[in-house]
Length: 383
Image: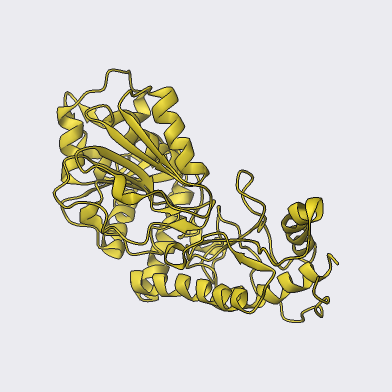
């Protein structure tokens, strides 16, 4: 064990490093909600205008193609993914990629709940990616762009064929707004406001390519669909969903909060600025890890390291053993929470023992740099 480091003096201005809900944007206060359309129907003219503005600002910020539909849907990213799985799968075989808990959850839904017979599961352990070259462009493909609980992301979209016959269904909840997504490679994309935007929970975003729309209008699954999953009427796409006419009642406070985050993002330079902020957070952690022999990234390949959900593990050189080793990350997280310098940085419950620091765009790079000496100090306290 290394000698305990001195107790740091400098503290992060914001100690919120949770991977969801994530830190609010810098300078946020409840005052930004003053114009929220509370007490009014979301179906009123002003209500629809607010919801449409979220869609329009999202399209502009992320450079989503004009012929892609964007909708606000129930139940966060989970609801958005489930809508796609239950409404579109079954038309052809599907390849399911999983390398962490959320991807594994989608595998379970497809195999155990939908019970699709022609489903190929391609899995990898935490820290690794499956062999992406094994995916078949004639089949549908379900995958997470960024593994929130493993800190492992796909490096790019080059493995997705431009002339594919199947649909690509991408859970991008911890990638959207922090990573450049190749939209023409993706047919269904989902995320939630409470990740990179630092918004409030309960609402999901669902983006459909023209190919995904064609699937919805030409294919009806064998199973019944709950109301909140239905995206068509009489075999045609329900166009209202993609104009802000939500299936269920949204929180107009959450809508206002999302609008504030979108305006902030545009004001600091748009997507490129958001990506740069997240990359700066990852770079700070990379420099810190490189100078220490007791800690390492869970992602085994630097090209697959996430800049948002930055997942760390104890390195092989760490002298801790047995229960002390297994319990070290939780002990470090608890100690830093007691000091009020870092909240919610213990690894995900299903992941190998480790630490997880959210490095999305709402986290100030200065705060990321400030928290790292505190991790050193808490680790030294274990000796």
